[in-house]
Length: 280
Image: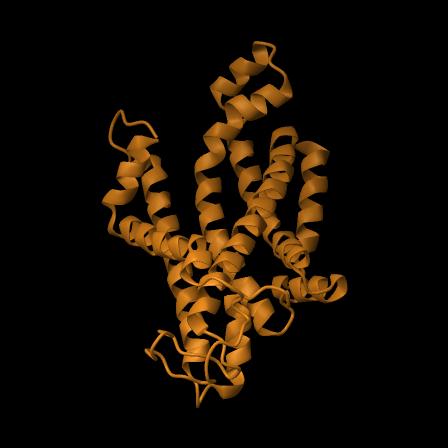
């Protein structure tokens, strides 16, 4: 693990991604200390420009502090990204592992079920699910997870199909190990690298999806998020550009940081790039 971290931070993209995400995470965790109180509260005159005294990012059309909204919105956007990614990875890994390990009719059944979700445009399916179940944190997480797991399932299936024919797996079968033990102790640890890389990139996509859903007015009305702030500021974009530009910049930095980190993870975990005799 230490060697992996060192390889990750030696790369310019890895260092840049780690610094970007550390900044966003610091803002998210410190939101209540940086801007205590309700981010929806009207605290000043409306439409104050950035760098106004006491309001570095200005205020919106109702006099709410944009900086407070960005800080508190970071928590919501990151939480949705993390939880939705975890749901997608969990579901996709389980189904992909079952399909790849057993093969045959089980593989065909799981893959046909996966293809049903892949034939439907993902964003439209997410919007439909949120509209049906009502705009809330749970429906948004469920919708993003529902459209994201098929890619994980196909990735895990491919890894399991390749690994189950290796000698160490055959030796475990001959040794009388149970299927669960073989899956969790032999195959899955060797398939974690591509799953981790896919999860880092999927989290960036989840944040973008949540922002798009909130931008269209289907976000959780009880929680402020970056997408909601962009959507609320689009009506006054020419007069108060900062209302959409600043939360948009926060999304840009977060997604770019996750993509940098995902690319660095891909290079650090690639066997071809490891030093001879090195261990992850």
